[in-house]
Image (tube, rainbow, N blue to C red; front, side, top):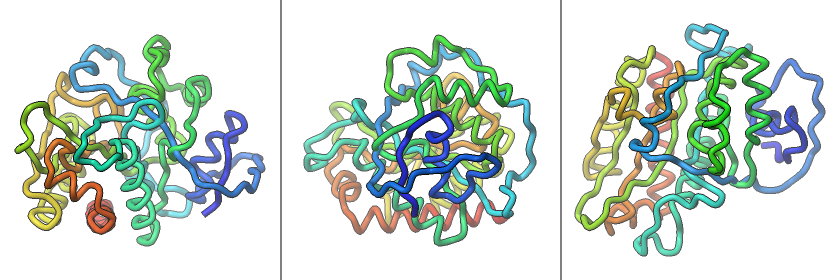
Length: 288
């Protein structure tokens, strides 16, 4: 895998895509810089997301998105990151949500690539595209966005991510977007389990329903005590799932506030097993 750094708008986009081998059509030379990629992000809650009124729309259309090599393209989003650590709990043994989501995301990426899937990360744990870079790419493809909501002061907000998601779809055709998170609940340490959320009116709803069903049958009870499937209304859906035409799902892998879930989430063995399982489910769904 190539290791690169962000230098300009084009190089920034190239960094996310070069490791996937799908950054095509531009005369951009990337520096060969070794190092590990890490990133930061702020993720808004369902309640906070409800006031976002405009959905980014791309002027490009697609059907069963494939890159020029005919490979499936999946965008993975490690929830939170940077200054936004996500949920915290003493059960996580010194880790924050952002650490777990990044670790698992990188494992899912590796598992998918072994299955022949092209994978794009919204961020790598070290850096992410700036607001200006995302807007420049969105303008290029005629994608509408709200400039004020791109500048809320949050670090790589959910709204910025959904615009980036839509840009990547316009550029390459994205088959699936998956955002990974860790759940938490106050004063209820007995609540545990996995969940998957998606927007009920997504144009690829059948793909999302199939992913949820396959993940539930594969993960329960070996990887999770139970799994809840939420096909949400517009008001209750997450920003990254409802403000795009890409097949988009948000997965809560477990509860940091539950000791049993937290023990799994921080386990290398569990993370590897979950990554392999999710990768298999994704490929099964996209091959249908």
